[in-house]
Image (cartoon, rainbow, N blue to C red; front, side):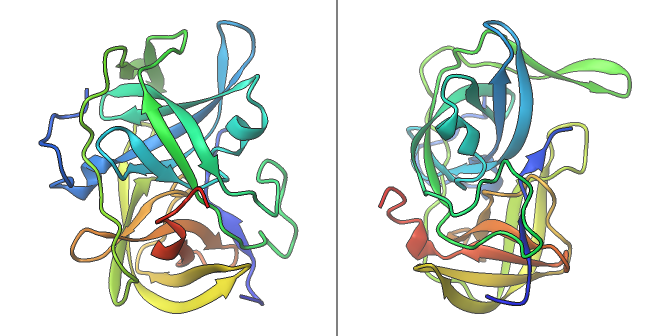
Length: 254
């Protein structure tokens, strides 16, 4: 698409409830926050950015966008991925990630991000981070928001990938709207399909705008199936976003 500048919506930082094996009864249960931590030394890490991911298999296989995990792919020595699922956090390893046309760690040009396939498959495993609690200062008080999961993986609730979307959709992700972890739902209408650099995409006109941190969120239809991967937001129109179509998600490692 031309004439509109698009921006990444990763949030840059200045034990899940047991369910039966199968598709998540509540789609929000399959959605989690991804954090990128950079090592300052062997014991101390600094939070760099965060985004959203969602499970596509019960074994911990999940999808997000490549620009969220970019540091973990390109700086293996210093960067680690952490996935916060419910009240526990896990390690996350990148299985594969699309090669991007822009470096998301650098400021975007005035023309915005160059659109291309932006999908990553990750796998969650028990935590090996040196800290056992993930906390945050809330109202002047330090609160623990998640603890390290060190045992075998549970059966994670997951979402199924459906066909192309139409009509009303919703995006479930972790937005920058609260000092605590908070799942945010943005609702909208599928607008226009198009292709950029070989990848099928579509625009969404939202009734409430997505938040920073929604990158990697699933776009769901009224059957709770994944019909897109939310990836970009318009720099000029906060109620307009772009998602990648299901065709980009079925074989993320190709």
